[in-house]
Image 1 (cartoon, rainbow, N blue to C red):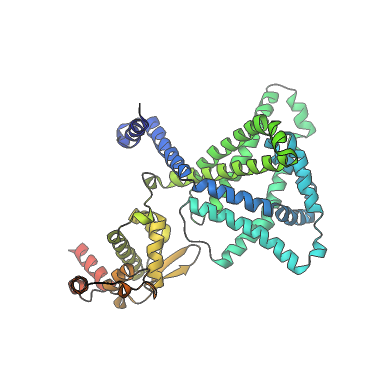
Image 2: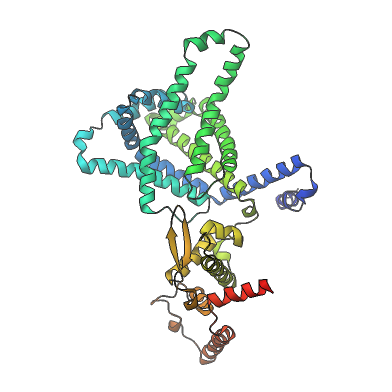
Amino acid sequence: MPLNQIKKNIHTKLWEVELDKLPEWQRFAIKFLRIFQAVFRDLSDGLPTLRAMSLVYTTLLSIVPLLAVTFSILKGFGLHNEIEPRLIQMLTPLGEQNTSIAKQIVEFVDNIDVGLLGAVGIVFLFYTVITLIHKIESAFNRTWHITEYRALAQRVSDYLSVIMIGPILIFTALAFTAAITSSTLISKLSSIEPFGFIFETTGTLLPYVLVIAAFTVIYLLVPNTRVKFRSALIGAIIAGTLWETTGWIFASFVANSSNYTVVYSSFAILVIFMIWLYLSWLILLIGAAIAYYHQHPDKIPAEQNLSSLSNRMKEKIALLAMYHIAKNFHENKTPWTSSELSDVLNISSEALSDVLHTLECDKLITRHQDRDISYLPGQSLENIFVIRILESIRKHNETTCTKIDFIHSEKVIDTLMTNVDSAIEKSIVQLSLRELITVQDSNQEN
């Protein structure tokens, strides 16, 4: 059977079916198959792999400064001795190389003398760590199709909170888990059935549970949007299970292979480490994509590409966005955020962001920063005319170097365009946003 026919059959099975008429388990299966199809589509485009590779590069540059900052913080709480054994545990998928890599990293950290760095060196240390966290947030925001970032002050405070509090919570939890599993009481109970079976099963599942819990927290906190717990959990379950399973496969067939040593010699450890970092970031981003499509199933069929939007669509998006923003402002309701507008208009965040940016540049709307970035009218509603909104979109990207007057034209064409502009302006006269909302309200009352 030809490949195109196979794709057509899959599309028919997944999309040309009425879910309401199917049993619950079939609805559940089809919904997840749609999500996986969307994730596979994103992977085929290549962007997740590029983001994963970018994060590998940033991680290699930042891992020693990150551990140096973490070491300094944990030292104050007496937990600094936990770094090396936990790092070895995290690098288990690298097989026999995990111990040497962990010791090498810790040795780099030990060689950093904070006293000799000075103020500039310490600032650079924190800057390197913050850059890594910003890169991670950027990758997650793009996976969630978010084009707006946190305000600078909020970003710095959030990042510093992660740097200061995160290591303490993580290593405390790991140390507590290790203490419980190695306690005398647990050892004695393990020799008694059925406790032995229960503890053995728990020991097997515990790494999965910890990874899933960590991934869930990441998916909830990192994207600059409100992520539903259920969506984050589902993405974490799939990604966490995939990460643990991939780690076992990697350790069994890749890290312990002698072929890498033959080809790369002493660089083999670094190559294996980079491959594992790449797979880890890619799996984490796949889980984020699953969480996104689970929370926004309406975005699965086809994300509108910005370049595919016609001028007419952009004009309608601008008018609708201005209408909703103005109406909420007029009725003293909560301002719209970009993600809320994206959902209510059923368009991609990228397409909406470009239109909102154009309107903002022309001072038709302005940003309001609270917990999330929202939008308010940039002027009084009486002074914002519909013709200005249309002109804002139609004249976008016209600069001093790309003015329409620079085009060598013909008089008959210039006359035609002038008549078209005059007809549009005449048809809406001096219609303002306030009048547009009033007309809508009057129609609803009638």
